[in-house]
Length: 401
Image (tube, rainbow, N blue to C red; front, side, top):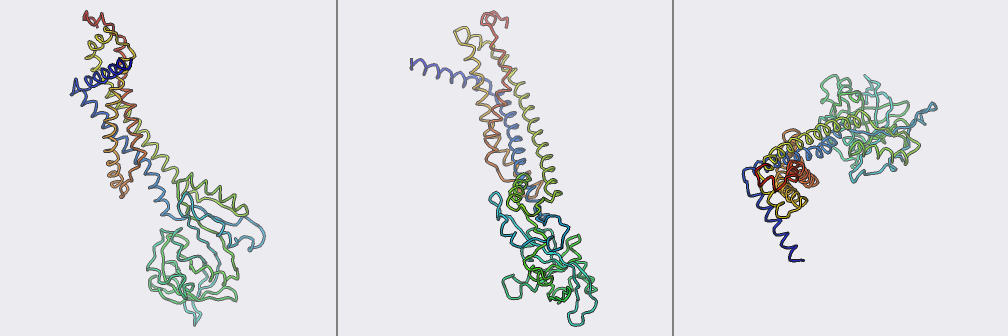
């Protein structure tokens, strides 16, 4: 019995090999169609997966996407501020990537461009924050010069950043001429001095503000350990960000945690549209590839009538005959998919470089998916060969089929 099974398997694979090599021209056409489909499929799938990472990176360049603020209150101003210890309760990572959290305290005070004469004062918003971590939540700001001091060095809390418009108003000239100037900050009976170490352009209301070290603003306003809000830059997809917000709300039930919706929702909409277009294109490519294979297989079915009639005449079961053709189609799909998927990933890297300016990363999951889809398309394209199951040997031998 084992010898008979071995003989049957040997004959089976000989027939498969004979079918594949019997008409090289037709096989080449099928391989080209499947290979082209696998290449485009792998390229688009790799771009689709990489687009999520690329959009996430690009949107992070706009700055913070989550804000922690005090809950609305109609009582005193003190209750509309947060305790600074909230910072210690914020998770430092999300999905294995760091979460950047920067506190802000907003107060309104008088600013004197000359600490000695105390003339030409202007009332501006003085914002206390971590000057040396601020770029993680506002990376789009344009700074005029490098940061001169590290916060751990002596005098690091005496630096301040001036918005472009307020710098021009204070010194009646070009904004960069304010660099190094000493400012006197006055709020009630409290005063602080700082030196303009940077002039920035944010393109918004921040251009009218003075940014100082958080401790400086707290001393000026007599608000020790108090902050107005916290801005967070949370990495990940919109779903990841929303899950982080849910977790944060459970951990901080006494504050208001909300996303900056123009960023998170905008990112989700753009990705959904890109993903939809790429998915539809992949489906269309697979359908067209299946139709091309189906057209070639129709001609193959016409050519193999006599072979099938002979196999059935000598006792070959219809199920085994169909299995021959399915294995042939699967092998063609496998060989085309292996080569085409590899070329597709390389193509996606080139397309990523051309579209985004940075080559797409090859995603390993794309390779087996593209190969499996190609095999499925090849098997689906072999549907016309099912017509051979209805051939009667007597009709073939009489020349009627």
